[in-house]
Amino acid sequence: MAKYIFVTGGVTSSLGKGLTSASIGLLLEAHGFRVAHQKMDPYINVDPGTMSPYQHGEVYVTDDGAETDLDLGHYERFTHAALTKHSNYTTGKIYQAVIQKERRGDYLGKTVQVIPHITDEIKAGIRRAAEGADVLICEIGGTVGDIEGLPFLEAIRQFALDVGREHTAFVHLTLLPYLRASGELKTKPSQHSVQKLREIGVQPDVLVCRTEMPMTEEIRQKLSLFCNVPTKAVIEERDVSVSIYEVPQMVCEQGLDRILLDRLGLSSAAPQLDEYHRLLERIRNPRGQVEVALVGKYIQLTDAYKSVYEAISHGGFAAQVKVRVRRVQAEDVRPDNVDELLSGVHGVVVPGGFGARGIEGKIEAIRWAREAGVPFFGLCLGMQCATIEVARHLAGLTGAHSTEFEADTPHPVIDLMTDQKGVEKGGTMRLGAFRCALRAGTRARASYGDETIHERHRHRYEFNNAYRERLEAAGLVIGGTNPERDLVEIVELRDHPWFVGVQFHPEFKSKPTTPHPLFREFVAAALRHQDAALPTTPGA
Ligand code: GLN
Image 1 (cartoon, rainbow, N blue to C red):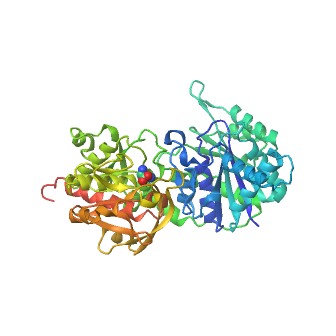
Image 2: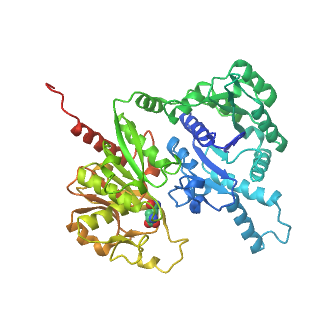
Image 3: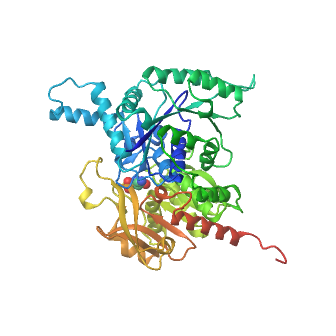
């Protein structure tokens, strides 16, 4: 029978419940348990697929094509949990299911209510996510006290009653504000948030406290007393200085894994953390650094390209170097300032995106990287922009564009597939994992060391096969195609140190311990570029 850990948050949002949940997952896996992860999001949108990056940050895509919350990216990076459409439920998705059942007459004429119908639907979702796992770690989004979150908290209270309190652990993440004037950490907001939780009938077993200052013994005892949690289960989660990957170690040192195992009646000897410790060693002792530019539209938001930033840093872990990212606003890039904006970088990344804003700047940055021989990596829209750049400047196709941005371009090198035309926007995206056959002799093939790969997609437009021959004649190499539909998935350039564009999102599958091959090779190419550019030391 599965065990269940519920993670709630208090005081403010953005405390890092996702990271804390993922850290618990990593530690339980190290103890040999099969973990599953789930996120409940109290907002009404059915999924984050249609939300603006300003609202929600990145949309994380699973193998089965679900558009989900970016916290699922943390879970996948920290653990081996297989995430699916059942790994993320929103209030909207729950209500949609209940309303469909009501319309079908499944409730046999009963009045349909939050309790039990909505809560039953939530509980069914929790059970589904736990299938095949020893432990499910279910994170409840939002902050305790929010109106929207109530049905979820009610559902987890009932859940513990249904499966037995001994199979359930409640972890509450909270913030200890530090008052500079008096030099004190304050516990009152945490006390109040635990009170709110207890009002609903949920007593936390563990309190994880985010704090910028060390917690004194006195504070720990005060929190223990007022929140009704044993002192050893009051865990300090200090702001990490070097990397988010330090969080599991920090909470492990305070015995968080032990407390949870004891709570759930699970036994295990010491956790196997060798691989993880080796990773920390590499992260903490970089042997050098490189700088790459990320030319995008939402560069002021760290969350909008979350998985891309992570995957870039993983490429650095593989080479044991620190990768600095220069965030460049795509709209700002013009032919007259591109040199200045990108000078000194050892690589250029153009991430995915939708909408015309900043497109010409991205194309300009790609032209610069191509002409300067600087490693270039294009992700989804980045690959489409690279195709447009090559079409315009190498194949002589003046005015080449994607029909997403210019419907009557003379050269639609990126276009909708014929079977997609005339269909409404919703439901026409290519979503989730698709097969890609790699061509021998390409950089992609060398990076993956494999003939066939599976990568995740989230886009509507495709490389237009009508232009394949002309672009190949101009030097573009088709590195990989989807065999089922003959779709171009990877483009490269023959006469360039490292120029790769992929129609998919490799960033979603990168982990710190197993960096994605293309990010690993991109960073390696950036390092070679840096070495080549360094002035040779006289006499060396
Ligand atoms: N806007 C492009 C398309 O829909 C690219 C999408 C993306 O980068 N995820 O095809």
